Length: 388
Length: 203
Image (cartoon, rainbow over all chains, first blue to last red; front, side):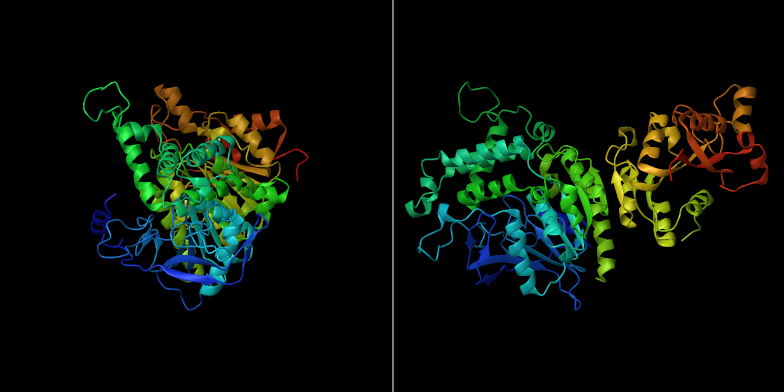
């Protein structure tokens, strides 16, 4: 995507411009699902738009597996790429910052500034590494609720997220029913399938198997488990795309134009995956990747309610928008329909749209016109409701 | 805002205020929005068309995008007070199955369809030997979405056979006006049929 092109093609849909991440420190330890607690801890976040006087127009955007707080705009004039959901957040965009006050944060355990495995453990004076506690989606909701308290946001107009972010939106609606007016759950699932967990496990094993991993204490060895983390990302990437989009993008195209009968990069798709893997290593932490995939594996809001998702959702007070994409095979439309069915059984208000898209799971990040129209239409209603 | 289409107006008079409604093939959500605003009705629409789904969401109507031919397995027995289906029955693959599903998930069903027994339809087929094109059936045979057309008598026979009680019937023309003569000879003079039915013994 070329953000600059988008900026000029539609004058009403602008950028939030230059944004500066902020940092909030929480002294009181946060009790976690795993039985341990973390704290003091810090969360890094960004905000776009203005909180209105009644404080009713706040929207929380939750990030997916490898995301962070930088969802929209640029960090500086030299910045080449905008935030991960810039096509969706901004003045005139589906999440319209002329109406909403958007908050996006880096989750606890992340590696983009919030307290995570690479942070210094105050008890030892060394990086947490493998000692960082396992964090779960409910823990993130609890930590985000504390951030909301500090920002003076009693109730979110909407909690929005795709993939793991959509799972957080779902968990918010269940755990904090009074604090969520609308939950927008995109390309998510009510829990992972054995196949999903299997992919995550292979990704983790790739990291564990890297000799530079050092049991997660690689910081102290001054190395990074590059090969393992890149391998994990390559595997993930395959599952995010669809067969169609890969075929369209690469086919069986050869880099040198002819087969070399060897194990060097020959096919364009191999080169692409290696590039994606290598680039990922530059910005992501292996321990965080392990934590995030575990949070995905453990996600199961029904488990706390007798394995009955409808029972769990009966607590919710939010209205829901659930979206899926036809070519997403990581969290296929059938998984979203499970959420919709549970919402219907629980008598909750829900709309569901299945978006025709060939991009696979990654579709939730793409500016697909019909998808954006639905988000825009839904959120315009939310804005009216909260007087934004 | 323009006045509600008269057939939808009739339907909304048949629906008790405050009830729960499922609208199959809800289109752009006009009926549900009207029912929500004027009768405090809560409910969902089911619609397959992208454009219609987007319009529902834009007007704040709950809509579930899915194919009615896939059935209503997502809904429990008696989950709704009414299941409504306007001008959709004739376009689904297995009308009798979908009707049975309607009667399962709703305490009452409200159905409207173009009456294939209308005299104009009969005349075109009898006199010209061509597939009828009328106000209620405007498309040519090769491009119509309607694959299971029926007459008032056919529908009532099916209801009898399945043990569904007809609680109310109205016949209207294509401008959705009720005319007194339609009551006299509904199968001959009514262009669009509206029914309210329930399972026998149902509430």
